[in-house]
Length: 272
Ligand SMILES: [Zn+2]
Image: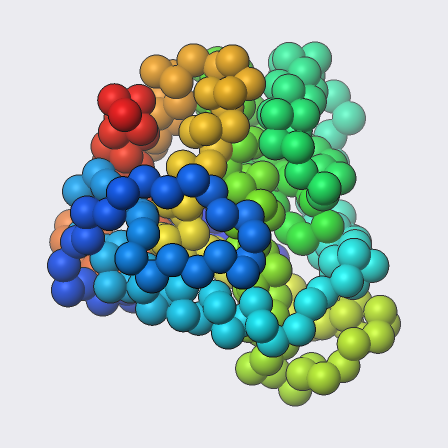
């Protein structure tokens, strides 16, 4: 698994552009049955999330209706993935600002009120990255912990990762892989473990822009409700922005939001 391809600034697949929808900001529907074709998403002026959001909701609906992953299956897939991470990277017991990091994690976790039991892992890597896997595993690189300047930044990042669980992004991604692979129909724990190992690179494929924005919005709310300073949440992206290539061609070929777009959305959330 290539950690740097996982998440925060990875290249992703193309989302076509027709026009932006300026929808209202909806509350976070964690219930998979809620279907709102007209609602949402970010009302912050970026170009990709209008019609594509509608299409995405249709896809979500069909994935939600397909079958359910049991708790045990989620745990097994997460565990298998964790073992893959361990083969490549060293977990750190001791890391920068450990006490504050663990306290921030506890605060965000408690505010999220999720039925998922989240576990935080810090891996030794100079990459600046955070990613998450089904079963509640949240991974931060030591490079990320060196990069952040406040626990407010971290609170938002952790909230964002929890958002991928709460908004069912992980679950749907796994279902999608299963539905389009030779694993379809296999439901035993051993099969799921095999899926996690064999398709590890697919599991680690990045989320698309819509999921990223949804998680940003979720992370914003959770970190804010946990008492962190909303004005610091975008600091991380402001630093990243300086190193990004923002040519329009790059932008069209990326489903990963650019930092400048994410900063604008966060500013929009603060204003509203
Ligand atoms: Zn994300």
